[in-house]
Length: 225
Figure 1 (cartoon, rainbow, N blue to C red):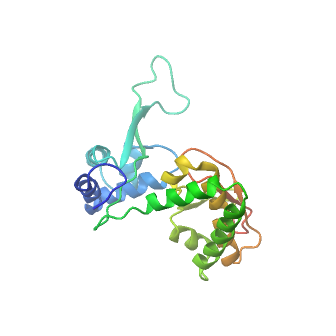
Figure 2 (figure 1 turned 90 degrees about the horizontal axis):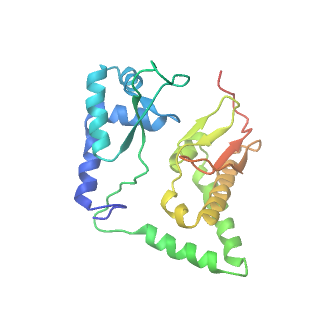
Figure 3 (figure 1 turned 60 degrees about the vertical axis):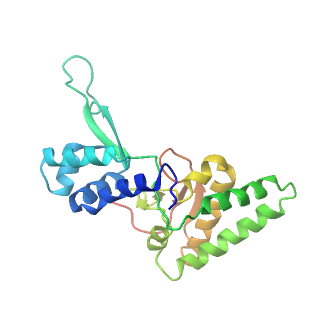
């Protein structure tokens, strides 16, 4: 077994929390939101009571799959504002298990080091071309958002019609090779745009904590109401 963090049995124990249907619904709701989620919001989304939601959310927190914090509602502060409300967000921790042991991140790190060390620019150019080619192939006739989800980006439409990507599939590698990975991210998404025939879309770098560094601008789909 291999995991990105800790012992394999610990990772299995954490992931086993998602077998329980209510707990899985709560996890999916929390991780689908761009802002922290309160117990009341999570309970309403899952169609359960607040007390039961709190129990399952705390179990997910104990497993390391989500993180908890406290904050007062926006616009409320000072004396009489009440106690800060508990809220939940996706955990930064990454959990995966493989049997037998696999370490694709290790090989990716080796290749990233080689590209970064190349002073001629030839490897960087080759990697960019490969990313676009793989992006085009990954689209495989799918619509753009389906193709993005298939690559792990978790796309979400904004009110302006842009697409933000709530997850970076290469988060761990980006920590040590941010410029290289963000650039290849953009090249890969450019290829997805071409493969999905989204000529009006443009992949641009717009780094923000908690999501992919790339945003797709003016992709031609209808804006949210």
